Length: 312
Image (cartoon, rainbow, N blue to C red; front, top):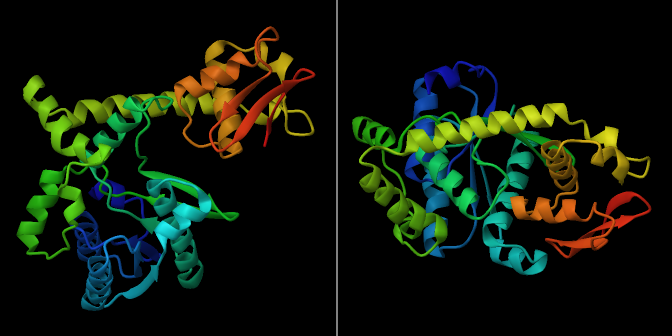
């Protein structure tokens, strides 16, 4: 983790996203011990666990006071947002957190937010995305930016190469207290089943640790994706109205066509970008095929007059 932290300015103001759980508590403690002075502890209460959620918020606020740090907390009605926006829990909760982080950054003039995702989280995410058909071995990046209401949010994950076992050892050595989310131990969600059932089974079958291999493959895949993205300038394939000019797209190799389509859909904030969805979209390029295909979120990709565009 140290070489990751060396990239960050200890004198700059940073948010630290703290849920109250083990990983984020370890991150906060390590940052303080490493000399980070201008930290703002941020907590988002998703109101999903009744009194336990309020207990988490109180714990994190007290933790900030213990370290002598500023605290910023907000409660978000995630269930209400799910119903009003017709989105899944994970998407709504993530978007809500990002919105809170942006408001906290604006208030405290912070450079970005530091989060506690670690190497085991990375491997579980890669397998989850792979099995749901995502494009490439998509994992978590050490650093990325997210646009929220035209504001750019910088997200950094200093623990991304640290194993869960190392975090447990750190907790014991420092005598840290943290909040335990009982739902994390219940194998009823896909992610939790990957954590509690799939990962241990893979270790048993392979007779070795599998996290380094999974994460290594994901790193190579993301490097390849970055290279393809650098080779594709989406604007070169768009007309003045922002539609894909089909003849220009069809001049490309299939792999680059996929990269252009991925960027186009991503620009239009189409969710769940799987390999199969991109393949379906590229079929629309064929003039003897159907002139449209359905996109997640109730929209369509349409072909008309040698142009591809997205329509409600």
